[in-house]
Image 1: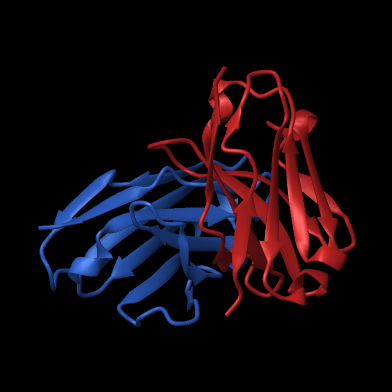
Image 2: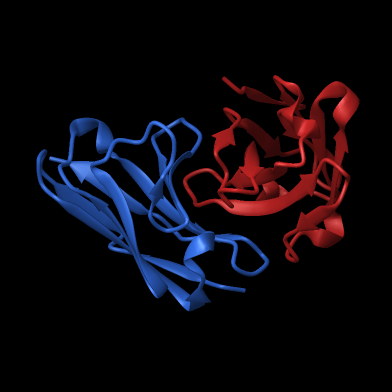
Length: 108
Length: 120
């Protein structure tokens, strides 16, 4: 099973700042099979990024994904108050499909 | 816009079977372009993939749950279902159904989620 480790656990930043969220895999993951989700309290997760760097429909361009192999990053270029949420990475390069433990982004 | 809705009992007794159905608002469940999945989230914790199904009936499930899980599809009713047997308190979670396009290899549409509590 591929274990995804996300860091930091919590990120506290001000509006307009840049956020970098890390997702590290226990073994190499094809970029095709790496995705990022945003989850706000009481809501279902929302797909942000798939294939490591492709934004899903309707996702603002301040969200971007990058990385390859075992290291992937979600970047939010200019934080807005509505970006306060937990962010999860997910892989399906090999079964079982797994999610990271999440990074909580707090807006000061 | 596609909508999905989970339905089923919110309370299940230990050792019994949890049953949920996801109704899809259009007939995309019969499309060869999509898989359909179940994901759960215990209160205050992260996400766990339970399993997925294709319109043909082919299923894929998490080895950690495989012995207790059955996922089925009914294309005539635009729905797919989850059964989880021999539940314990550890199975208490919000259960989500979601769509997986072959092109994206990620879950792009999610239901609102259904909280299922296992308790006597």
